[in-house]
Image 1 (cartoon, rainbow, N blue to C red):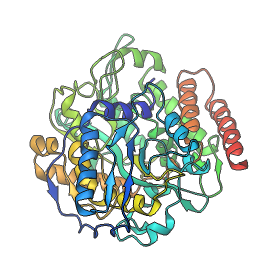
Image 2 (cartoon, rainbow, N blue to C red):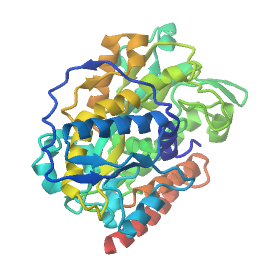
Image 3 (cartoon, rainbow, N blue to C red):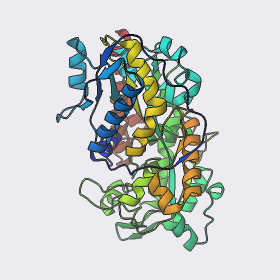
Amino acid sequence: MSKSPLSRRRFLYQTGALAAAGALATRGPLSALAARPNGSVNLNFTLPGGSTAYLQAMQSIVDDYTKLHSSITFNKVTKYTGKGDYKIPLLASIAAGSPPDVTVVWDGPVGFGAQGAVQSIDKYMANSSSSVAKNWPSAALASCQFGGKTWGLPATAGSNCFYYNEELFQKKGIPTSRDKFPKTWDELRKLSKEFTFWKGNQLISAGKIPMIGEEDELMQYIWPALNGGQIYDGANQKYTINSDANIATYEYMLSWLNEEYKGNAQAVDQSANWLGYPDTTNRPSAFALGKNAILEQGSWYLGDFYTVAPTFQHFGLAEFPVGPHGSKSTAGFWPNWVVIPQGSQHVAEAFAFMDYLVSKGVITWFNAVPDLPANKLVPLLLPSVAVQKRGKAFATDAIEFFHHQLNIAIPLWNSPVASIANDQLIKARQRILYKQVSPKQGLSDAQQACQAALKKVLKK
C-alpha cells in the first residue's frame, strides 16, 4: 500500500521536488497591504521543514515585508531540522513560553487549537481586507475552525482530481475532452477495463485501480463523499466511518477489485508502482511510463509530472465521478497552514504579517514551491513548466480547474484528531483490500478508535 500522504507532501517540500512556477494571469485585484503595526517590534517566523528554495523564498517574503514596514524586524527565518516530528520542538517552545510569533504548520490548526497551542484570529480577520472569511474557499477555511473560532489560515491548498493519459485514450479512439470523461463509477469502471492487461499474475497495465495507487489519504474521504457518505461530521463533532454509505463504498471497490484485478491487492502492488512518483524502492511511476491510464493526483503534479521522466506529454484533468448513491462530484485539498502560537507577545503584528503572507507574499512562495494559493484575491499563478510544455492556454485552464476543485471540495482536516483518523483509515483500507476483514468490520474498528480519541479531546 502507498505510504502516508503526509509524509509524501512533506517529502516534496523537503526535497524541493515541486516544480518551479512563473507566469501570472489576472484573476482579481490584490487586497491592500496589511495595516502598518504600531510600535517597533521584532518577530520570529519559523517553518516546519522544507527545501532550501522554500526557506529562501520565505526569507525573501520577510525581507520584502520589512521594507514596507520599517517598524518591524524579523529574526532570520528558521526551520526545524531534526529527525523527529516538528511538532515536538514547536509544542515544547510553546510550553516554555518562548514560541515563534508566526509559523507554518503541516498539521491542521484545529488540532493545535483544541489543545490550546495556537491563538484564535477571528477579531483580526474581521478587520482585514484580504483575510476576511469571504475571501477563502469554505472547505479550506473550515480546516482552521473549531469550537466557534478560527485558529489559522490556509495559505496554500492544492486540490486534486483525476489525471488521464490522453495519448492512450486517442489510441483506442476514446474522446479526450474533460466533458466526455466518465461521470459515474460504473462508467469509470467500464472505461478502466480498456487499459487493464494481465500476464499471469503480473499486472502489465491498468486503467484505474480502486483505492490502490493513490498517493495520499485524501481519497479515503473523497470516495465515500462521492457515494453519499461522510467520514467526519464536523457540525456534530462525531465520526461516521462505519455508516451504510461508507460500507457500500468499500463493497463496491472490492467488487471492482475482484472483477478487474483478480481480487488480489498484493499482486497489484507487486506488479508495478502505481503512484505518481518513484516509490520507496525507486520503481518508476507506471503512469509516467504510460502503463496506467488514470491517476489521482494534485495541482502540484502539473509541474512534477515532468520531473519523473514521462514517456508521454499530453494528459487531461477531470472531476471525480459519482458513486451509485452519490449526487455530485467533489474533491479534496492539501494545505499549508499559518498559525500564531499561544504565548506570542505580538499577536496583532504577527497577524498583520500573516495577512501579507497569504495575499501578497504567497506569490513569492508559489514562484519557489508552486502550491495553489487559497485566498481568492491572489492573482492566477501558472506553473512555468506547464506553460513551457503545454502552453499558456492549457496551464491557465488547468489552474482555473484546480481552483474549481478547491471550491467544490469537502471539509477536511476539521477534526482535532485528524492525524489519528488518517492512520486508522489507512489501516482499515489495507485490511479491507487485502481481505483480512470485511468492510463492515474494518470500518467499525476504525470508527471505534477515532470516536474514542475524539471523545478524549472534547472532554478537555
